[in-house]
Image 1 (cartoon, rainbow, N blue to C red):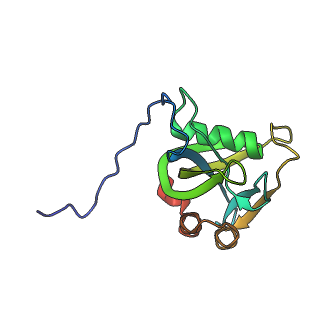
Image 2 (spheres, rainbow, N blue to C red; image 1 turned 90 degrees about the vertical axis):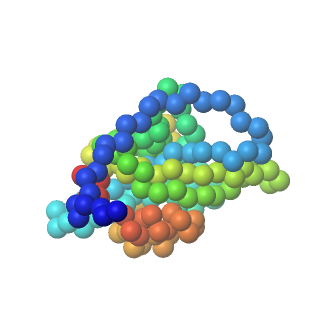
Length: 164
């Protein structure tokens, strides 16, 4: 079977989620925003934020929110954690995994689904203002600063032109 030379892209429609309870040790899902901006000369920058506990560099992420689409939940987390707003894209940029430590002995395995967020607005007042640092970096530098190998790859290969 031959495929057409040009493939068209179908729009993905996300439905709001209904969240069921999970057992204590089950793998959890989180939704993250990869905040970005395109500078006048076409240079792409990515925003990283500091984590609350260790201060390492991460992207805004959080738990699913009942009644919200995954991309909407990612955008809400970006505002709560970084005070940024903009256009969130429903296309999944990638997945990465990490262990969320609840205390010194208990961690939860998490899979994070990443969505692009084109930043257009910065708020000085937001829920976690003062608790986190925000930093704009090139894709290369941002990829070097995060710990998770899959997230490094997502950031390093990110091309906002694929979202449009």
